[in-house]
Image (cartoon, rainbow, N blue to C red):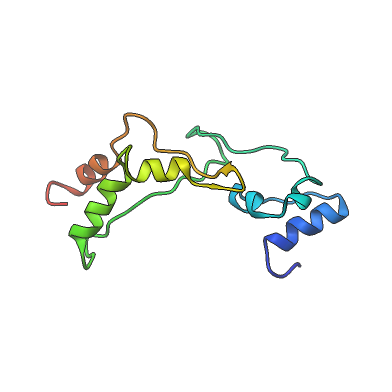
Length: 119
């Protein structure tokens, strides 16, 4: 077993000509000299049926201490000129790590609908 995952696992795989599993953010953050020795076999897509899809969710708890600020943050996160722009433009070593929420999706409205009108 290797300590200090995941970077050491990727470096060892490159050194031994072996394979490993990792997330795309870690792949992008590893040194280019290591990436150059390896090939991505397969990678997740923005498809809800993709077994490699790793979606992130922003949730505001019903007992949040500062629920108003949390809800404002959630509202900002889903705006095209707010959090979605930050997500779209965020990169590591020139690789975009994240994709934005699907067009036409109103995740906050959906969640509020599930929690009831007082959410």
